[in-house]
Amino acid sequence: MLRSLARRGERDVLHGSFGGFFHSEALPGALPRRQNSPQQPPYGLYPEMISGSAFTVPRAKNRYAWMYRIRPSVQHSPFSGADYVPWEHPTWVSPPFRHPCPPVQLRFRPAPQPTSGTDFVDGTVTLAANGSPAAQDGCIANAYAMTTSMSAKRRFLRNADGDMLILPQDGALVIRTELGDLKVDPWELALVPRGFAFQINLAEGTESARGYFLENMGDHFVVPDLGPIGISGGLAHPRHFLAPQAQFEDLKGDFELVSKFMGGLFRSPISRSPLDVVAWYGNHVPCKYDMRLFMAVNTVSYDHPDPSIGTVLSSYTSTPGLANVDFVIFPPRWLPAEGTFRPPWFHRNIMSEFMGLLTGSYDAKPDSFQPGASSIHNRFVPHGPDAAAVERGTNADTSKPERYSGTLAFMWETRLVWHPTEYALSTLNDADYPACWGSIESRFDPSQQPPSPEPYGFPPVKS
Image 1 (cartoon, rainbow, N blue to C red):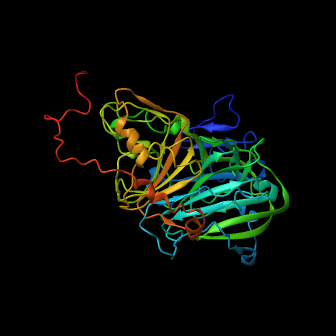
Image 2: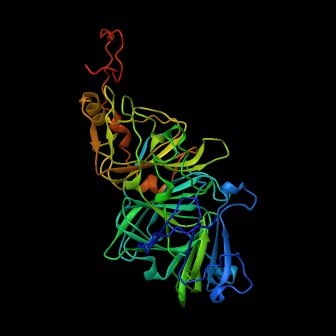
């Protein structure tokens, strides 16, 4: 059902439901209400559909948008294949990779500060990847650092390989898309579906910016089912995802289109801005989400729940419950577990983890994991809290709850192994990282008999 999702007094974004239908028009009556492709569209606009799913998928998985634009997008692309010039970007690359992938714990330092005149595309560094753009499977983990806007270079980007999940760490962004603009601050995320042309600029007053972004080449992200959590609250609420209001420009000039296709980058001259959509509706749309609105779920008795309780978005495979990639966050929250080692436990998982830190500190590595850094713990590679976290977690007074404040870590957890890039291994790798577990002491004492009966982690009666 087509429904209005705008809230009065909020001019820049549309409120709605993630995966549901939004609609917007920059001129009154520009959006046809009774059909998709009228013979004589309002204002002489051209109807154009972008489909994010196959026509025959179940209706619940349909993703598409209808746009009503000044010129069809065929005029926002080169007219000759020779104009798509391959670009051997030094640091933005795609899988599959052929170099060895060591089965070791990995940590990468933040990417260096870029030089003046570096935009989002120039400043992208691929850290690890898996799957295949050709097979539409897997994902790519990147960092970005920029000192200038793409608009300064009259440049646009169109990624046909994957949906882009953008996480600003430092510096606010304005993401201009075919469907409108989104201002995205740190603590927020932006999601730009594959196929759209867009531009990432520094927000007013921002001199530089850095962060992370994921290219999801698998199925589109959805908010996870809540199961026993209930129906109206918990984790990320679909109504908190915001879409842009329609706005357009009719500009002719010398522009550049950077296309990502089949894992390659291509640079092309175009003569008009592709941001000329006057009205649109659909559910295949760019959006943003404020991660401070995430309703964290945690234990109120004992033990540390699995990290899946922090899942914001999931891209599923055909196997029920198995994700191509889960996007998980570790936001500010209370930890009240009694009689419990509160940091994440030691573990080896079949899923592979890419960790990043947007701000603050991470409880499993409170002194050594810095904002902008990243770590990879691949399939069945052992990992867990470092020696300092073990010491603190073992001796903490768990009769008192602990509040984690000012911190936001995240994880991209995938069924496929994260294959680090040659650049990350040779330039950013912290080769001493595995040594952080070297000073953990053996506590085994066969003469120390455990209490009998074993106490409850959370006694039903307070002593």
